[in-house]
Length: 173
Image 1 (cartoon, rainbow, N blue to C red):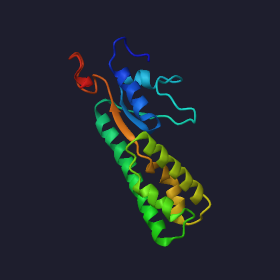
Image 2 (cartoon, one colour):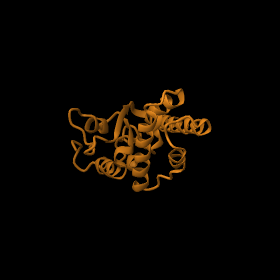
Image 3 (cartoon, helix red, strand yellow):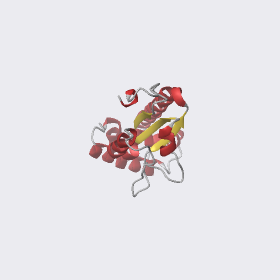
């Protein structure tokens, strides 16, 4: 991974990548995790065969919690807006997507990987159905439709971010 021998952060990151894969969004604090996490041209974050993979961005030291919260709130706001647009399309009935598809997207639980894969397929079908539509709601929905697939946002940082330099592991709690 490029991290120091015995570093506990890299197994956590590997596990997050395995659990959440392409739905993983990482808010990373400046420090050693940004060195091994963003050391281009290599990265420990892998993408799938279809090109999907985690999203990673770096923030400065102590403001990383707020940075990650901003990522979470942005995802939630965009997803909420997408659902609002779906409601408008259901009311107007002027969309190329079927009402059954729109309802299925709205009611999807996304609690398991199978649920998420099914939602991703529905969203792909939605995007294809509304791509040719010229109404403003469809154009706006096309911009935020991917947020209808639930994201997992994690805040990662080392001992500096956790005010733990020299204290031996508080940052791993």
